[in-house]
Image 1 (cartoon, one colour):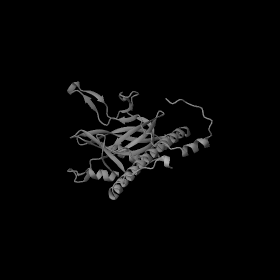
Image 2: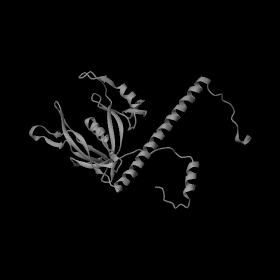
Image 3: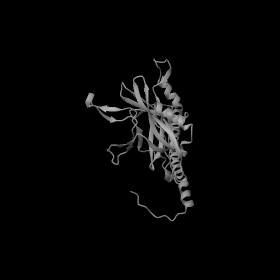
Image 4: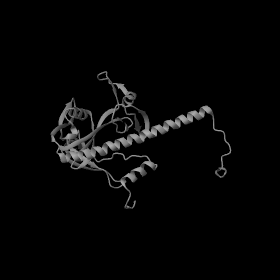
Length: 276
């Protein structure tokens, strides 16, 4: 633990020192507790002995462990909840039933972002979201349309009870949020999260719904703005860090290619500092 020391430096002196002193580049990844909702009922046991263990439409929180090898703590919080949607981002994901493995991208923001795709912790592809989805394209035999196995998802940062959570949406719930986000400035209103039952043939599920309850108060707005500034700064730092890594990788590849063209450097006697 670093000992706290008292400083007598002025703000201008500290700023100048920060500009002149080489800094280790890095970023703090956004890591938050999670919000979710069960989309389908889940039973344990069969027949009359079957017990409902997950109720469709039930919202829950998941809090990370305080110890390294601990488990996340899940708590059900009811079939509806209120919160403020601070920010929304995107992610690609695909679960292969045959291999029982996930392929997914990091969270990103725009269609122009160049993002990696990982499977089993290893990068398998890199490109724009459209490029990546094209690599997993297939023709759906039911409707003849060309689709991608990589699924679009939305990642929301939601302020609830003074805590910011991460919530991932997919399928019809994602499209319901996209429609809602076009109807209002979501960071300026208190949103009621609820759900409604849906059916498609033999498949039944609960789709999340979103409704604006009221405009947030000036006091709530101050908290929202503070959190938004932290989020956008963290995103900018992360993008700058990975952009610098890409630049370094490109420069190294160019240097290797140039060395391969011109041949190895000729070894010779170095200059002894004492000869200066």
